[in-house]
Image (cartoon, rainbow, N blue to C red; front, side):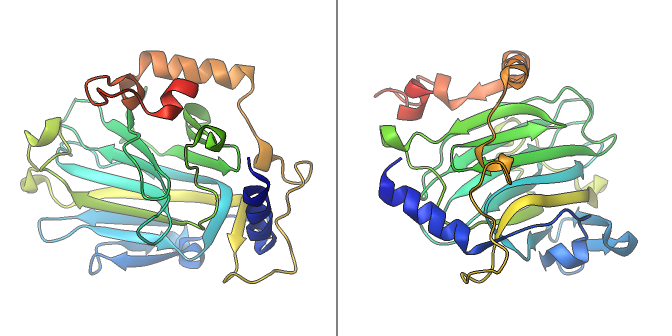
Length: 287
């Protein structure tokens, strides 16, 4: 990493405040942003539900912006025939050269597995899709979907099992999200033009309203940007104090990652030679 890039990271982290461990509360942590009443915060802030009907979906976003963090959220996805629906849960910055870290859950016909779609955008460039089946029914109960984002890597995990790692390869010329604070977003919406079997299966509106549920949000290991101003409580770059800032996969989790990718990955852009006839993206060659 170039010295100027390292300095910019340190300066941005210095404007962030460390989040003390506390139970997430949707009233305190999130704003409902659209849906005309279809999104609801329930149980004194412990539960949030998004609904989709033929008129509209719904969504929410975090009050805070983050520059690096370890974000956990438990989701229970739309049950039954959810074909055509997409539940999106992601981090994103603003602007035309935005950064983004995506979980998207593509709905299914009853009895067929959900597809978990992941992507990473850096400076407005994405096209880094990896897709997975899950090893459980994500509609039967809540499961934890996590994003670890630090200066060295991004790790996607499900119930503590890593499914994808995107490393910082700026030294090879690959942009990495590191300078732009991001908010957490989530939405439930109709995407039957592409979501299920490439758009062949349409949304069955007789099953509406469709509902996705959220609970147990945690950002206790995160750097929150406070309006770009310095905070009296610095997030800091000390890996002893904040070990998640330098966290990497140990040998056990490397094995779990390989297990998931061998048994449950159904698409990897780094293996799609037809899509990249001029050669695979740089990060695919060096990862």
